[in-house]
Image (cartoon, helix red, strand yellow):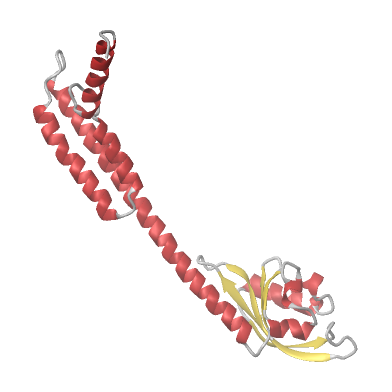
Length: 226
């Protein structure tokens, strides 16, 4: 190392010492590292341990760090206090985010479980089942009801009642609208007509229309059993 490099090395060494050990009023580097760990670590216990460790390190920092020339003592106290406040603020925000993520995952598991149960019910039910939204658009239909109408279930999904079953739309739309507007079920309605499955035969069904509500109690669609 040549003589010209010595001042540069000395400045770098002093800079590193200054950011890692609070020689002046700058926030020490381990506070920044603690913030990163609090955000990155997944466990609540790990986040608390990092925050507590950082808080405890602030005490020897304050006691051992030399006073800054011309700076009042309250400024040193404020500097360390702000550092502790920042780390705990970030910790509490990270803990709340972790809690929200865990709650969301738990809700997703419950939703997936209910969806699996619903699919099983739809697949194994001996009666025809379907669900339409407020726009009278089919969102679900089981094989039994699809076979009654004459097309596979995928044919109906995304289509409105009038688009998918025009031959029964006049009766069906009236019952769907009544359930959506009143929020009350329409039970045991006799429906007569023909379908693609048997175009030349007049058939008879017994249909019940039940409102499906969201978490706020608003009707989000109608479930039908035929």
